[in-house]
Image (cartoon, rainbow, N blue to C red; front, side, top):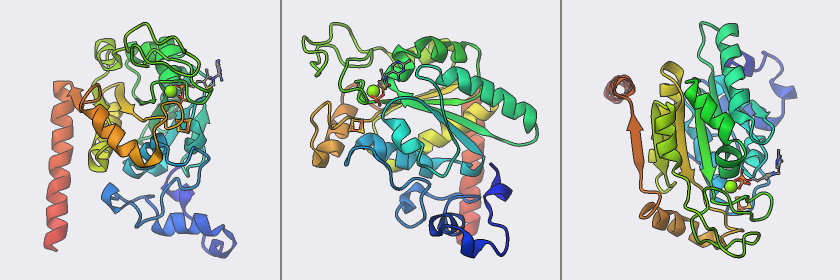
Length: 293
Ligand SMILES: Cc1ncc(C[n+]2csc(CCOP(=O)(O)OP(=O)(O)O)c2C)c(N)n1
Ligand code: SF4
Ligand SMILES: [Mg+2]
């Protein structure tokens, strides 16, 4: 992709689907849009087949609104609920075999750096707790050991949601699930600590209760990965179905978990901190200038 590729050739507007024309005219391509404006611009993902009221689907919606360069981003997913919405977005999506996402993303990011040495191409993996911390554990870890420059986002619903309720390494100890009826016997894996030890330069844990904070975290992780190395976000994204959470209670549930296992946590290396602070300082100055004009 790229901005030029997204634009419609003059004269062809009337032949293009309405959705596409709206996306180019009123969407995010080539612009920086504040996530708080959601609902007032054409979003990169709209219709999708995830369960009604699924909080993972909400997180994915905010994720797309937060991308710093959607026109130059490739998203990688795999089997699991998230890919149902990721594959419907107006951003290129690659489906890695279950467990392979971080190996495929490593090759892709390296290939893009060779093919487009003067351009920034962001690669983001978004996959479930099973995909990244169980079956794909080795691939995830080794991409971090090798310091591959892309972002990994784990949408942790603490279960294998897409296959009907098996326990994962991320399910809490003691939890009974449809296909784990005697209760989980082991602790939840500490993914954030593993990421730090394995070489990630920016690590965050988040419960999606505050869209501005989600957006800031996603943007920081992507910007840091461009320059310094692997970055990781561990996001709580509940599963209404397997945890029997009524749709109207998903936000209350996310707030509740935020007080327990998912207290906001952010860690980065000193050089990443310095780099991000400089970018954010410049952005603030620019915004002030624009208000003054
Ligand atoms: C190699 C391989 N093993 C198993 C599966 C079956 N499978 C599909 S989705 C899934 C579990 C998904 O759980 P998770 O990664 O946590 O994502 P969620 O659906 O919970 O979002 C499994 C085991 C598969 N597609 N490929
Ligand atoms: S099964 Fe759970 S995580 Fe998957 S789409 Fe439905 S509510 Fe969301
Ligand atoms: Mg899961």
